[in-house]
Each structure stands twice: as C-alpha cells, then as structure tokens.
Length: 503
Ligand code: 0RQ
Image 1 (tube, rainbow, N blue to C red):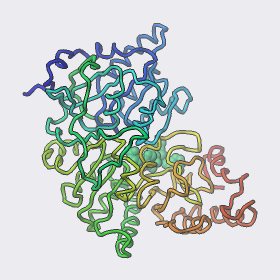
Image 2: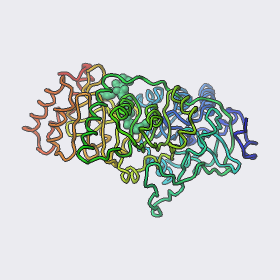
Image 3: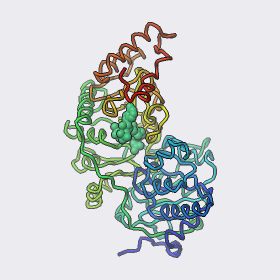
Image 4: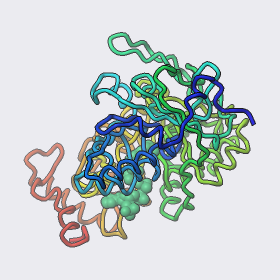
C-alpha cells in the first residue's frame, strides 16, 4: 500500500518511539494532540512514561508540563500520570489516574475554556512550548500534515513548538484527507478580523496542517486504535430527560422561537446527550445541523439517517462499532463532517452568530440557576469545564441536563447554593431533569427558584428546598437573591459528614 509519509525528508526521520521520546527533557512544556480519546499520540507518551519511570527509580526527577486539546486516553494521560510524570496539566481531562492525583493535590491542573487554550498559548500565558507531539494520518509531499480523528490545538502546537515529533498512524483511513478545515486567519489582537464562517458547514481554511520541516526531530510510524470506549445503552432517566427536552423544543418551534429544523446543535458526550440525539430523530426533526466539539455515536446515526445534514466538530468519541461504521462509509461522512481546530469549533463569535442550541451535563445547579459542571462537594474535580462554557454563555439557548439526584439518591443535584460555579445564573436558560423542564428565561432570581423547585427538584428534596427558600425570603439580608449564608452549603457538609444530603 501507499506510504503515508510522502515527504522524503520527513521519511528520513523515522525512528522508534523510544528514540523519539528521548528528544523530550525534564521540565519541558510538551504539547500533545488529542481530543476526547481521538487523535492522540499512541506510542511516544508510553515510551516517555517508561523513561520517566527509570529516571525516578534512579532517584532523578522527570516531569513535564502537559498541554493537550482535551481529554486523551490511558496511553497518554494515564501512563504519564501513573509514573508521576506530569507536574502540570491543561485543559480538560477525564483520566482516573490523573484525576486521583489532581484530587490528592500532587498534580497541578488548570481547567481552561477549550476555545481559550490556543490563544492563551499564543499570548504567552503558559510560557514557551518546547516540544509538540502530534498524531496525523499522513504526511503530504510538501511536508504538510493530514490530521487524524481530531484537530484540537494541533495548529497552535505545530506553529509554536521549538521541536516537533510526529506519529503517523495508519490505523486511520487515508480517506479522512479532506475532512479537516484548518483556519489560519487567527491573528493576534489588535490585528484580528471577523472569522468568515456564516453556516455551520462552511469551509474557511486548509485541509492540512502547515509544519516547518526544520523543526521536526522525529517521525514514528504507528498502527493503533483510538480509545474507542464502548457505549452504554440509554437508561430510563436519560430517556425521560430527553423526552422532556423534546417536548420543550417542539413547543418552541410551535411558538416560532425556533425554526422547524432548529438551530445548530452542540451536545456534550455521554448517556443523556445520546438519548437526546435519539429523541430528535424519533420526534421527527429533520434537516438539522450540528456545530459542536465532539461527534459521538448518536450523531453518526443521525447523519446516516438524514436527520442531520452536516456536523462541525474538532474530534470524535466513538464506540468500536461506530468506528467501523465510520471507516466503512468514510466517503459519505467526509461530505458531511468538518473537523476544525478547537479555537474555531468552540469560538464564542461563531457560537453567538450561528445561535447554537447548547446542551450540556452538570453536577449541580442552585435555586437561582448557577451551574457547577466540575466539582463534587466544591473541592473534588470530576473532569473539567471542557467546551461547556464556550457554548453556554454564547449560544441561542443554553440548556443543562442532569438527573435530579446522584449517588443513589443521597445527593440532590438541585441545592440551595452551588458548591462551585462554572456557569453563572446569567449563562443558564433551561434546566432539565427527569422531573421536568425549568425555563428560566425572563425570570428574576426568586421566580427562577420557584420554577426550579416545582419543575426540576426530586420529590425527596422538594420540601427541603422550598423550606430553605421560604426562610431565606424572610430572613435574608437582601431579598433579591435570598440566601441564609450559614446554611447555604450545609447540604454538602451534611453529605460529607453523613453520606446523605437528607436532613
Ligand atoms: O460519578 O462515576 O464516580 O459515580 O459525576 O456523572 O451522571 O455519569 O453523568 O457522565 O454526563 O457527567 C457534569 C461530570 C456529568 C459531565 C458531568 C457524579 C456521578 C458520576 C458522572 P461516578 P454521570 P455524565 C462539551 C461539554 C463538563 C464538561 C462539558 C462533564 C459522575 O457532563 O464533565 O460539559 N461536564 N463538556 O456520580 C456528586 C452531584 C453529581 C455527582 C454527578 N450532584 N454530586 N457527584 N455526579 N452529579 C463536550 C466535551 O467536553 C466532550
């Protein structure tokens, strides 16, 4: 078969993963590809972790500062965290090994809006990037790089790093060539211009990544699958949440507040978003578009069935079955999917212009509509804000979806005051639980509290929330956003003390 490395100079740089990893030194800032388990380097991080482990055994320190697109996989975050090889990590991550260390206080984590990472690196906020490690599907004759299943921050990493290591992974179909749209018009302030994207499927850039061949220090050939997590079937709670959301959307269409084919969809990944996607198909919605971060199984189904016309993303999160389907019908999907850099897939200017329908999960919300997406009991990180803030503040409708309880009912996801805020009351329009939909638009804080208690709270916690609200209305220092400060976080403390938020 055809050689994936068509540039002769870069073909001459092919080495083993171990030799490539030897170019990375202790203390470096290393920027790697990868977004929600797609398009991450598969072998250099593992070889680096082994080297770190040997150094640590010999009493020598070896840690890096790690930048990525978003979450990756056990071969990257997991392997490097396990050997305590990461001093600092950003942005979104979801690896259990890394999470454990972050919450033990030994791994510094900066949870950043995903659209901010590239520009903050350009602004110099994270210092210099020493090495980029980027997975691609092929290297063109001219030395430019065809991305694989995510684009993430790769453009920025390749532009800014002093040294570049490339993994060429022939597990990816060659035919992904043409799916990507890498926009090079992102000048720095004060020289920025409007981003010329009007429709969610517009192409405004190049199909490959530019890369200065003089910076490339190593090229590694791989044949390894993306993380490919198997998919859980939707459970009853997810189905109920999706059904409430469908009723709400149909109502909005009837009132003329949304077009029949809705507005570009943004959806997180997981059980509930997948149930929502299935719900859209069942409810008869057609000719939809998506302007989102990640394409998961449900979106491929919608594309195949013609429910979804096109989808814009920066990466994939597919099950093994969906991956096979994607590869089998790659020519079909290439016509309908655009993969962008994450600064564009999540760009506030574009999310606002397109009027995205933003649907994200949450940990908890409070009576006034503030949303916590990231911290359990105010201090323990679950994953990170991901792209939810890029979309929530700027979309046409910002919708948060969650079961009304967590941990076998011992936690109410509606609480008097959130223990951490990711999305303020000003950024949240609609909250949906399996109990129902609270439409917070046009409501004052007190009106929002009444709507949330009546429509979203679990019956086990409704009276206690009402009681808190009633007493706060009487006793609060101010009556605009009534609170009893000594009690506002007592539900969380009670759970920590007794294992339940129930009084
Ligand atoms: O923990 O696995 O230890 O039991 O949080 O919760 O119910 O499985 O739901 O997978 O959809 O995650 C907000 C975390 C929801 C996710 C969050 C515990 C619960 C469980 C997971 P266990 P579920 P989900 C763009 C959008 C931020 C990023 C984002 C997220 C675990 O949606 O990371 O939106 N969002 N990106 O037990 C204590 C509560 C809890 C709670 C849930 N109230 N108190 N624990 N949990 N609610 C797309 C991307 O960025 C890809």
